[in-house]
Length: 202
Image 1 (cartoon, rainbow, N blue to C red):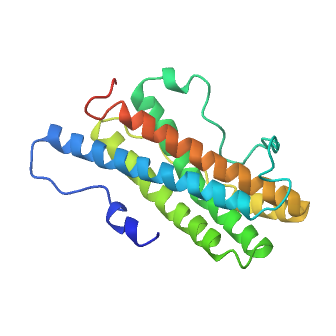
Image 2: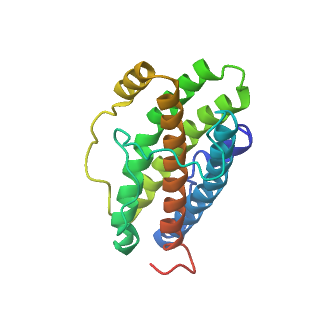
């Protein structure tokens, strides 16, 4: 899977056209990337669950929604915010995801070293969400609404250390939570960009 998306990794196509068509093309391309990653995120979460054993995947099982350093669920009022503000929040969440996905990959490398496809999916996800975050930042810049300054250094190393010392089940729950947040935020980004795409209701 990691080979097919290569052409989508740099969503900033050159254009000699006027600014508006160029902006529309950038939005459409970024929206398409977000839609593709939403599909990949669904596949990643399904595969992650398959490798964790019981009680993961059992009907009715709902692991605790543990807090994750540097990242939270989209706020209930997210959809009511102006689109540029939503995209700023999306960009911040997307920037926090790659190191967390790397933590999950390292933990799964210890817990499920033979789950090679899962490990590749996690590696690809970190790379792809980084590309999507850069594309959203480029859309914000084109809209004249850049993100708000540098972000703090991610606390992924601390997450890895604390989770590794807590045991196997907390490590599995963390991975489930991170994969779920990855899906939520790329899906949210897809919806927010859809408001700017032709036919959307920004």
